Length: 88
Image (cartoon, rainbow, N blue to C red):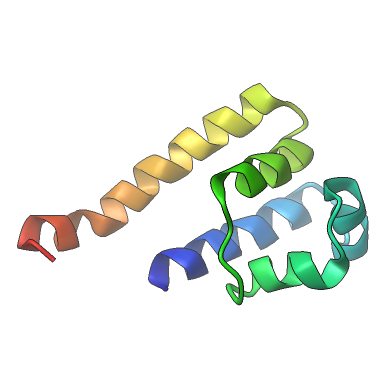
């Protein structure tokens, strides 16, 4: 759940940085505002294809989205490292 919360926070921050309202972003992504809000509040899990679609809209290109997701993956690995090292 912690990782889902971190991803939700990233999604909301990216939308705001992209200068999009919840309604504008949802329209561009092809979601309803309530669907996007569920992801931003960590109330719904998000698949990798959904994450790519959202990040592509926010960053403008698939290449930019891929770079962002690689950075996010590295951050998630760092957050999980103590759990991995302890064997949990």
